[in-house]
Image 1 (tube, rainbow, N blue to C red):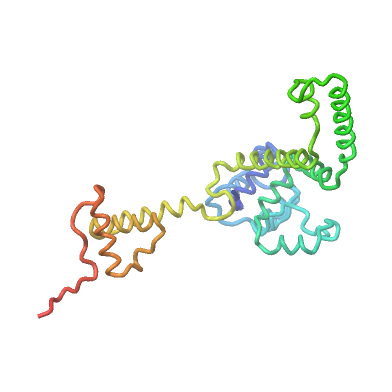
Image 2 (cartoon, helix red, strand yellow; image 1 turned 45 degrees about the horizontal axis):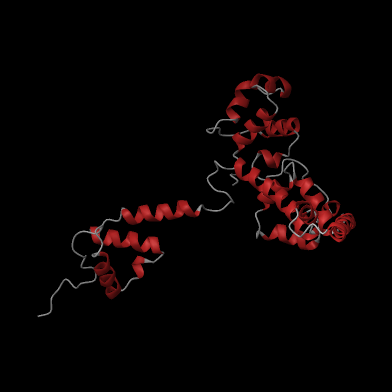
Length: 273
């Protein structure tokens, strides 16, 4: 989901965010247009300390961010106490057990505040009394109508009054669920073209590479087919014994996809006299 940006990419992104041309940036910073342009190319070689400091001050980011040392653009000296994070939360963030970048994207999404408000309403039962009062009114109205008119359980209006009553836990859990679903969908869509989705190796890419390696194995057609078959089943072909190999080939010979005679892997070249 996240690919670490190179120094040129960071510099170009910062300029594009401000919708500036190189000429405008050069005039604003006092650095030459040619130098600024070279900093944003993949084949750049070096950026002087003066240029780094100048650009960092102009963009309002840390020099560590520009150099790729840190992913934090600014706020390098934020007081942890001011964040009101628990020890358990700090330990979790530092553990590497969760995807902190994904967590940051969720927390900075435009609808995250709505999610937190709805979660607080649900957890603290802020609306519990209102929901309870509404349910009582509906239940009482239904009871009165049933006693006076006896319209039957399946009457349209009686059923409407019944369904209008809200299960508090179910309702607010659904609201929170919908909030989070919307956030995750937006983030997923934003990263749909990324190579990976969670800072990890894409399993499908790994499987494809392993299958390609098995199919390109330089051996007999039978052994190549056996390798592909084992790879698809998650079996380590190289750990098969001679007996297991022979049994596997005999099974695969029954398939119309496998042609030819089995490889004589493991057979002694010299014959007993």
